[in-house]
Length: 93
Image 1 (cartoon, rainbow, N blue to C red):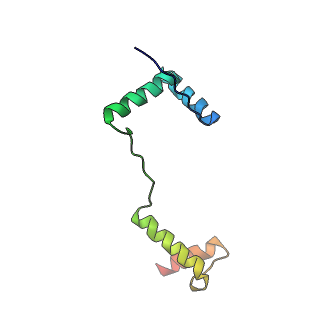
Image 2: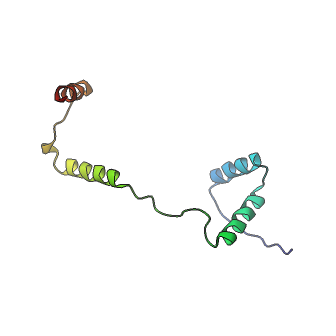
Image 3: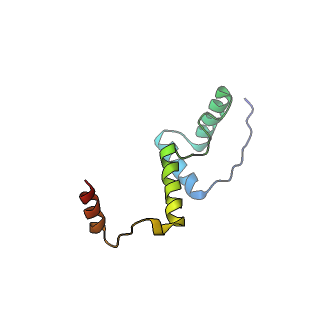
């Protein structure tokens, strides 16, 4: 079997953590990377989901509410002490 070298630059801390993980798994870096490459070829793509993490609907609504609060703080009650907020919430029940 012919072999070829692959040179990859990564953050030194990441390399150290990966080496530690792979050593615990009984692998060296070369074996772990070979496993990844073989899996990618067999999978015919990246063998895990590669996507941006988009917030779910509830989080998007909360972020929109936050933006509204920043733009119009006069519409919202402010509290100087947490105990005042708790009292207000208790009084509403």
